[in-house]
Image 1: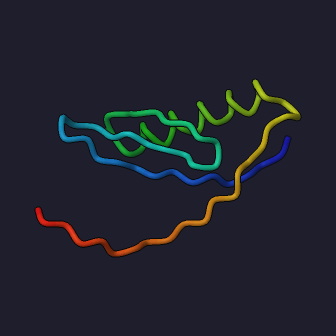
Image 2: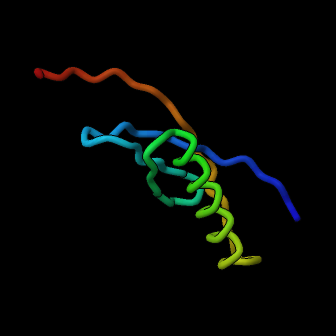
Amino acid sequence: MKTMKITAELITEEEGGYTVFCPELDIYTQGETEQECLDNLREAAELHLEELGHQAAIRRVIRREIEVHANV
């Protein structure tokens, strides 16, 4: 069994709870708490990788923050 690290990008939802996105695997899931989100993502990622088997490709993600101007 191979262990790997993936990114979990947590997004706070206005109606409550969180959505979490993993850019390496291009999967989303959700949960009521941050921990529930992370647990759900771990489960979804493991199932996704199991389904793909040897065809699983982990995308390399380059993350940058940029400034934008917004008239809000």
